[in-house]
Image (cartoon, rainbow, N blue to C red; front, top):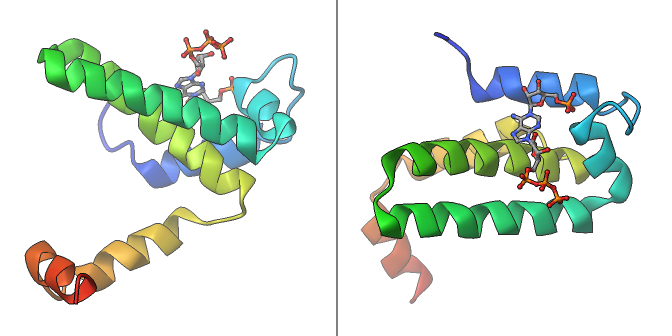
Length: 106
Ligand SMILES: N=c1c2ncn([C@@H]3O[C@H](COP(=O)(O)OP(=O)(O)OP(=O)(O)O)[C@@H](O)[C@H]3O)c2ncn1[C@@H]1O[C@H](COP(=O)(O)O)[C@@H](O)[C@H]1O
């Protein structure tokens, strides 16, 4: 597939959020509440870490997809738009990560 973006996935999640929890994983997670979605996101993140440490490329790609999908579900469950996260990232492009870290640690 080409041209598929995180914004497309966000729209798909918003669409499925109102489906029946019996037929949609997204709806099931959202119905279970932000804590459940966050727990699932954490589990997927750990699986991505394990794949990265192992150096298993295919597994890391698959687990990264799970992480991104579940992060978007967490954001949806807390009514945060992907654009809010992107705006935060855009603001950070004004300076390097090292300069930002130095400013934070005082
Ligand atoms: N990208 C995804 C996506 N990635 C992962 N998953 C689901 O995330 C779940 C978690 O997988 P695991 O194997 O870790 O967990 P599990 O063993 O099934 O669950 P547990 O019982 O252990 O909690 C699986 O059911 C996967 O199918 C996803 N479910 C949905 N999407 C997207 O959301 C759309 C809508 O899906 P539905 O909401 O299910 O219609 C899909 O068309 C996709 O575009």
